Image 1 (cartoon, rainbow, N blue to C red):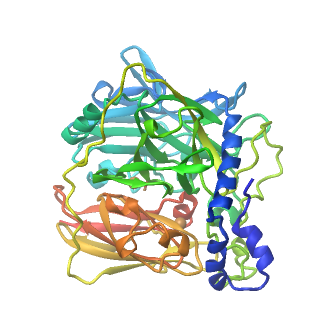
Image 2: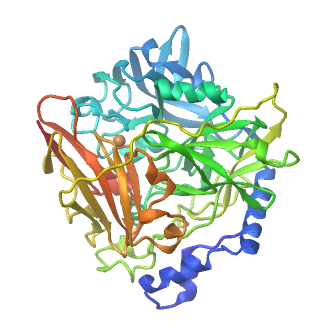
Image 3: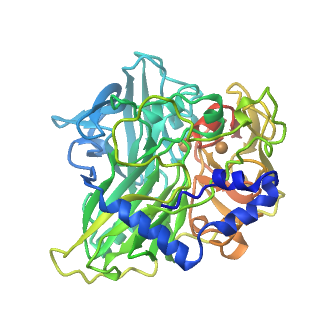
Amino acid sequence: MSTFTRRHFLGSMGALSAASAVPGVLAAIPSASGAMAEEITGIEKEAAGFANPLRLPGSSGLYGVLPASEFREVHVVRSAIEVLPGRRTPILAYAVESGGKKFLNPALLARRGDEMRVRLINDIDQPTVIHWHGLSVDSRNDGNGLNVVPPGGRMDYAFALRDRASMYWYHPHAHGYIPQQAYHGLASLLFVEDDEEAALRKELDLALGDSEIPLVLQDREFDAQGHLRYAPTAAQSFGGWVGDRLLVNLTERPFIQAGRRIVRFRILNGCNARTYRLAFVQGGRRLEFFLAGTDGGLLAQPLRIDQTFISPGQRLDVLVDLREADPGQPVTLASLAFDPMHAEGGHDMGQASPASPAMAGMDHSQHGSAPAAASSAPMAMEGDARALMRIDLKLPSAPYERRLPTVLSSLPAATTSANSARRMQLGHNGQGNWTINGGLFDPKVAALSVRRGARETWLIENAERSMPHPMHLHGFSFRVIERLGSPALVRGLAGARGLLPQDQGVVDTVHVWPGESVRIAIDFAHPHAGDQDYVFHCHSLEHAEAGMMLRYTVKA
Ligand code: C2O
Ligand code: CU
Ligand code: CU
């Protein structure tokens, strides 16, 4: 249905510059209830055909749930799983054996204060390293790629889990291999619990894999054999690789059954480059739900919303009260239509020239000519209205009368320092590379240093003619203080100081839209002695690979 995209729109806009076209584009996205209802009806029609049971974390196997204290070794291996029904897809995976059981990409469980002790053994033919996304650990244990594990090599991690309870994740971080390895399967979850988190689970009677469901959103492209295809052209590297199939927990076109009760979804955007505009829909309209937490744990209070963006690297903790839904029809988790703002067309990318083929049209639809594996699913461009998962409602096995608590955590309000902001300017060099403050990543050089214990304000400024960049900081989580210059679509969802619901929480990744300036507050306090080096980068993995990353030092 709604295949409205900026690409089509620019086609009809002729020579108007993108800058002046933006407000028009956004206004034209279906917002009137009629158009929105039509968009949602199309999404629900699509979801009606979903017939694959969602892969859920079990007690072993892919995404098996494993207490972090119950294993000491993780192997990086080549393996194969069935993603598309009836086909074997070769993947890369984290393999663990524990208690006589085998796990692939285990979902790890730990408690705040626990020690993580694990040896990584690299059984593949490429360098790799595990990065614990969102955790505040010392430079070596961060696995930020400044040191990597060669083929056949090993590395011992040992660190304390000091961070707030949340759903973190782990993935590879060897520069030069990050996008390929993550795309081919290396990624999974790490749940950290504390007292507040345990209280919420008790209060709402939540059980992981049943009423509390992790959702790993990924997009992939398959060839005719069902093998993953990853072969970005220069243009696709510049735009970010977007697969045409939408997977949830490595399940295509999935459904689940859920009781009419409060259900918790813990959502990771594990795509290389795709952003989603998430909503729960039913009967042609959006359902309201609660944002309970973000990258770095629970919000102070649940926020009632009816949609939110999630960009690569980010997590959302969401509570849906399915008692509010019509019991007579399914609910669908959807990505609503939006303008992905990829500034296609070259004319608006500044110094476009024959030397910068990447700028001559970043059209994700121009993927290879390899025949796609048989599927009834149409290709999914970024920003297309699409169903992600159907939720069939069933009666709860026991009466459920729990209420959402009004307070979720003791998260303090964000404070900002009086010091002037450090500016982080996002742009590109006209040669197909994205830049931070005009520079490209050099792993050997710390582009900036901060003092341990300093409280800094950073102003991340994205160019007007740019793409959205999900900017991720290693070593420290942070708070979002203010958004300025947001595009209309974003402004429409924002409250005071231009902030989005997600900005109320602790985050490690912030999505910065074209033309936006986002002010963030970072407290560089940590217990690690000596200088520590980390990175700050775009979590569109192809962007990071092409230079949009910088190394920084925390001076002891
Ligand atoms: Cu999730 Cu530097 O990464
Ligand atoms: Cu990270
Ligand atoms: Cu980027």
